[in-house]
Length: 278
Image (cartoon, rainbow, N blue to C red):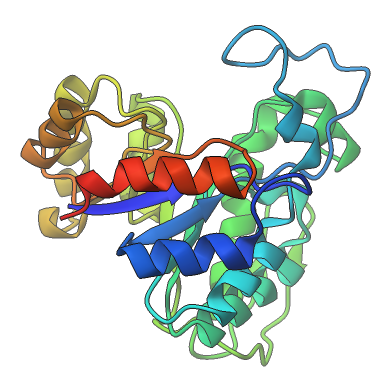
């Protein structure tokens, strides 16, 4: 099982360049970065984990800029987002950013997609009807896939966004990046994964024993090859038993949570996590 990591990189933490180099030298498989463009001060949306919102949420580096730095100083390290809030982007520009990063890194990019939780943040990006954010996410993902298609392909979406058949290069290295959809287990999410994604990115990895058979059944019912399903437990605090359990369930990658600390703190935790490397 591949061992990757995620971290809230900020202006106060270890740098992307230093972290990426250390991860690759130690043999970790990948680096996934989260995204928040800003956190409105006047916020009524509760923090999903409860309590006060941690400081790092309002100081997060742009994941694509940070991953570009990581790509430039590594050769094998996987690069991903965990997760990208597609509704907060212009999808034509985002498609270009993703294709460029995947092309320049030699196909190392994974697009983790999520729906978000912060209503005020999304509203500042024009997502005024919160109930539409899931459909809007998939509409924009479909538009991006049209731009990644090998031949000029038009797309007319349901939210007033469209793109003409266009020359849009570079293309992602494999035609399209691996897409993992985040979110809580449920029939609607699993149907979306089976129809539009390459796998699931469950935060914390709880409840997989019960939910994975349901996802796999839906995946195969949609005509997808069971061998191609990627399930990547995300933001995991590891223990030997927990990782062994994921491996028994058939998970080929797990993403461990690093603290949003300075260089000394983060490298110390990496040394602890190194014992889990295959």
